Image 1: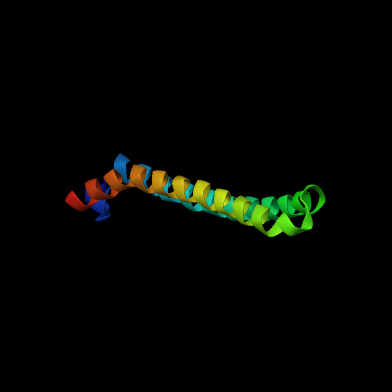
Image 2 (image 1 turned 60 degrees about the horizontal axis):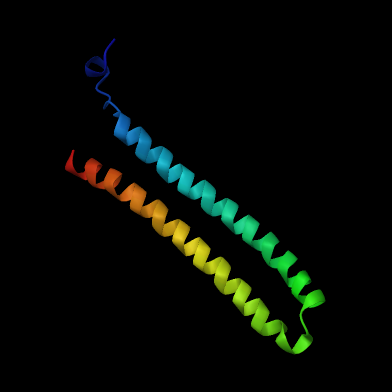
Length: 92
């Protein structure tokens, strides 16, 4: 039995790659949130021990900004990689 006999659309290789890319993006986003929460707690404890109390808010803000920047860069890179795949599907 062929795809034409069952009236089911054939899934191309690019579609599978796009779905895998989006799945990877979601998985990395979830992992990033979990790791970010753990990192936030650990770095908060380190800041409490090593940084003088009057400078702790500044150190915490700097750490949060760095984590936010890294997450933003990762998301932008992932979306740029997925964008050509999405455009190719739109043209089909």
